[in-house]
Amino acid sequence: MEKTLEISKRRRLLLVPCPYQGHINPMLHLATYLYQNGFTITIAQTFFNSIDPNHHPYFTFVRLNDRLSNDLIVSLDVASVLLAINDNCKTSLEEVMANIVEDVVCVIHDEAMYFCEAVASGFGVRSLVVRTTSIAACISRRVVLQLHAEGCLPIIQGSMEDEVPNLHPLRFKDLPFSVHSDISKMEKIILKMYSITTSSAVIWNTIPWLEPSEFTQIKTKICNQVPIFPIGPVHKISPTSSSSSLLSEDSTCLSWLHKQPPNSVIYVSLGSIALLTNQELQEMAWGLANSNQPFLWVVRPGSIRGSDGTGFVLKEFQKKVGDGGCIVGWAPQREVLAHRAIGGFWSHCGWNSTLESLSEGVPMLCRPYSGDQRGNSRYISCVWRVGLTLEGHELNRNEVEKSVKKLMVEEEGRKMRERAMGFKRRIEDSLREGGSCSRNLKELVDFIISF
Ligand code: UDP
Image (cartoon, rainbow, N blue to C red; front, side, top):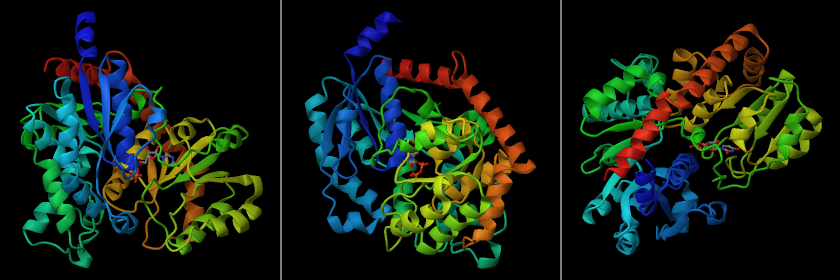
């Protein structure tokens, strides 16, 4: 073993994250683990949403010239940004590769940075793809493409509540992007993401026992040409890794949390992309206040459509709730969820947030917004039964108040917390020496060393 590590120490891995928070985090955790296991790490990142290299002194950072226009960046159109990045960064990555090709053992890239596969293969270098959603999300994206190809979209309004055939427990309304809209851009990205031609393996941020039938399906029918390494929850494999947050974390909320009783606080965070209307913000605020539960609420700068929202929240609302609530712009989420004062998580159900919550045994109040979040929410409430969903198109303060109380103080919530604690224990077992996650990680390292 020592010998293999020595050999691998001289070998470099080139990692290419997709420049959104929910993709950067898992890639940086993986990078830390691989570094700790003897590899040298180079991260190629776009100018857009780049992380601060000073937080990761053990890695070498290089830039990809994404040539994104300011208009495109401010449009917040994720699909167009991703298409532009994949079109524009090829030459930059080729230049990077030309400089390190003698030294590099393989390229590990996010699934959304699909241009990397052809670049690596052009240099005769192996590539591995990292998937940052659940396997169920991958399967349901394929179903949407199939429905589209068969001319079944848009779905007629009355059928949205029906279960999708062969996709239990997902209903049409849980599918991963709007079945009403023109899906051509997203379709292009997804087709590219899932058409592996030269990749040597798939690294997946999931746990097979969390979605066992989906895992079997993907392994035997959909992705049976290359090995799959399900190494999740990836944020737990390198607990010492530094923050890769694009916004600066406000740790003052931790001192507020220290003062709260165990399991009493509901943590509210809708991730790095979801946007709210001012009306939704107000319904959330007053629903939280009326529930009389202490809350820690992340109101991300720029997350309120048409205003920064913080004027209303900070001045009027904070005055009313006093020390009963703490509002920050960005929280150290993993630390927050691990805090003994946290008893529930109002989440948009991004895949990282879902895994982070399950890992700490925190039940969820689900309010999904887009993409894979609706499907994740369905699994949280109906399959794993560790959360309840805030249904309805419009947020309503009475519903918010009722749901928060149900999750935090009622019997139904207590049972969900118990089940969530079961997930935490099972995840801890998977991470232990000999557990499935730990075995899959070791196999991944051996696989890379074998190149
Ligand atoms: N996050 C954080 N602080 C916050 C809110 C979110 O550190 O205040 C992190 C969170 O821990 C997670 C990521 O941002 O790792 C969000 O990813 P997720 O997949 O949950 O949602 P997305 O932002 O992609 O919608």
